[in-house]
Amino acid sequence: MNGHKDLVETLANSKVYQDYERAFGEATGLPLSLRPVESWQLPHHGKRNENVLCGMVAQRSRACAACLQVQQRLSESATHEARTVSCMLGMCDTAVPVRLGSELIGFLQTGQVFRRPPTAAEYQRTARQIRAWDLPITEAELKEVFYSTRVVNARRYDSIVKLLSIFAQHLSMASNQIIMQQEHAEPPLITKAKAFIHEHQADDISLGSVARSVNTSTFYFCKMFKKVTGLNFTNYLSRVRIEKAKNLLLNPNLRISEIAFEVGFQSLTHFNRVFKKVIGQSPTQYRSQLSI
Image (cartoon, rainbow, N blue to C red):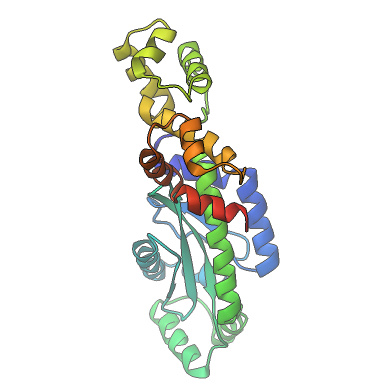
């Protein structure tokens, strides 16, 4: 993967995300976007369920700049949990962080709604702001699009954000699987090495032993493996072991310590640390969610 941008783009194009985005829009009438951390575009512009007034605002440079400032505030505040901010027109926008293990890779975003019916005073403030931005819209048109903006009460909106937070966890798990896959043909040497790693992942294998299994030097193998997979040998082996551990955690009769040694970790502390780094939560937390 060429950075988080490519990974998030792969997630956004996946069937699971496309299906969720469609169902989310049909159920709530709200826009939904998945964007990488590095993106500084308006996430909902041109998308289904985009607010009509927001679409007009996005086409004017001064107004668009103000919207981008809101996106920046969201990005800065939603690094660890969902955050909601209000824009200059009084609408709310929400960002939910999506992580690859402990690392932030992007945001699920929705919003462009009022959380209570707007007042006449709030309309007047919006009208003054629209005139300051010099948007080509009549008073009658502005009233129509302003008062047709979707209103979602605070309790229901909080439930919608909770659903997005749960889905963000699923995307985090999917990103870990995607990063282990190749989007192009890989050299036979790497294919053979990966097969050896998967076969012996429970053993105390080393970089040297894998290099010997494919008849190459440790230096050349290390360089080639990182170039093709995007991961060094240690990180790749950890991810293979963690994926196996996730499956074993489905069995409630297995203790976490048993699973740790079964997948090749020699220390429970090391297993817990690596699991949290890769998945973003401890094995105990991950297992508890499986039973919900």
